[in-house]
Image (cartoon, rainbow, N blue to C red; front, side):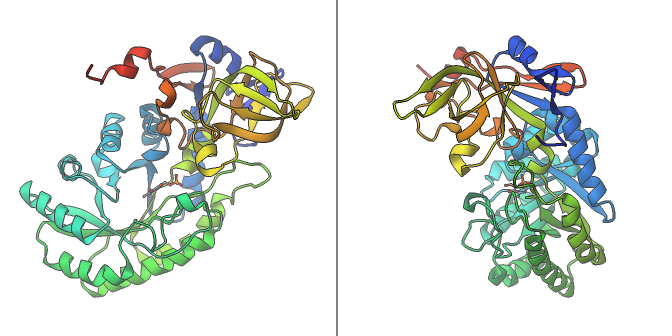
Length: 417
Ligand SMILES: Cc1ncc(COP(=O)(O)O)c(C=O)c1O
C-alpha cells in the first residue's frame, strides 16, 4: 500500500479519508471514481515545497483530470493551468482560474481556439510550428492585439518512458526543432502582432530520471542565451510536466525533491520565472476507480477471471500502455488468488490486471483500482454503449457527487434520428 495516499483500511474496509468506499458504492453505484481532496492538497504542497527555492509558477496540466472541482481545488491553492484546447480553456476559466494564470499549449490549435485564448487574455500562447506562429500573428492582428508567445522547443531528448508518452524527441510531432529556430527568431523580430515572452519544452510523462530534465534544460538554456543575444527579453522558461508517480510499489517513483535538487542550480541563475506543468504528479494517486465484481469465472486450464463492471472505457491505461494499477479488495480477505481482472467490453485488451495475486473476493464484492486520478476519467468513452461513470470528491467525512453518471438518454442526445 502507498503511504501517501489517503485510501486506507479501517476495520478491514477500505476508506477514502474518513468515508468508507462500500458506502459510496451503495449511494452512487459503480463504476465510480472517488477522489480525495486531501491528496490533491498534499501533492501540490509537496511540489511547491520541493521547488520553494526557485522563483516559479505551477500550472496544473488539466489534461490529466479536467473535473472542475479538481481544477478549482488546485486553483484555490494558487496553481494556474496548462490547457491544450479550447475545451480545456473553457473548463479552467469555469473553475475560476484567472486567464493570466493559464498557458495554452497544443500542436494543432484551431483559429477559433487561438482567438478565444487571446481574447480571454492567457499568459502565454505556445508556438509549435512556423505556420502556427504566422496564424497567431494574423489572428492577434485581426483582434488588434499583440499575442504573448512562448516557443516550444523540441530538445531532441529521448526520455526513458513508454514510447506513447515521450514527446521531446525529434521524431515526434511536438515543438520546434533547433534547426528551425533561426527562422523563428527572425520572424519574431519582424511580425508585429506577437511578442516573445517565453521558451517552453515538455519531454514526456512518467519520467523517473531527473537527468533527462537536466539534459533538456541545458539545451533550453542555450536557446535562452541565444535569444537574449538577439535582443529578446524572455521572461518565462517553461519546463513542462512529466514528473513521476508510483503506480507499482515495487517501482517507487523518484521523489520530487531529487528533480528540484538537480534543476534549481541550473534554472535559478537565469533570472527567468520558471513554469512547471505537472499533471499526473498532482492527481494520479488522489483517485481510485471503484468497481463491483459481476462474475468469477474459471476456465478449463484453471485460469481465474474476475469480471468487473468497470472497463477500459473508464480507465484505458492498462490497455493503452500496459500500465500497472494496484487493485485492492474493499473488504479485506485472508486469502488471495491469482486472477485476471477484466471488464465487460468486447476487446481482449479490456483488462485491469493479468495473473495478479489478489484478495479472494467473491461475486458482488467491490474492488478499488488505485492511482486512477490521472488520464482516467478524462479518457473515458461510450464505446460498447457504455455510460461515462460518476465521480465523487471526498473531504474528511464529507462526500460530494462531482459528476453524475451518464444516462441512456444522454448517450443518444446529440444524434439526429
Ligand atoms: C505540454 C504538456 N504539459 C504537461 C503535461 C503533463 O504531463 P504529466 O501529466 O506527465 O505531468 C503534458 C502531458 O502530456 C503535456 O503535453
